[in-house]
Length: 119
View 1 (cartoon, rainbow, N blue to C red):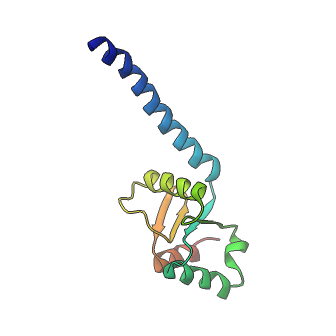
View 2: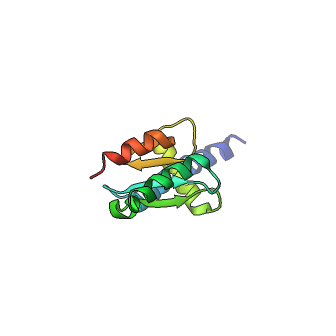
């Protein structure tokens, strides 16, 4: 029994390290330096307020090159969102969330204020 445990421990250690590396690579592949990502969910009223701000300002999201990723129905976007939340060391994962320069901003009003600072 002890031999089995000693054989399994290195494999567990290696696998847990690989998982973290893959998660980081996934975040870095999609969220490159300088990228701004807006995570939203279909039917989210706070997300709709940010969307209304974009539209009221002549499709500001497109002008600023903000990537918009829906997370309620898109599994790939949700997985990236979860990785970003971990990277930002947030205890709560909620939308809307804006990811910019390695930092997360949550909530409609704080996001709109953050967007105003983007040039």
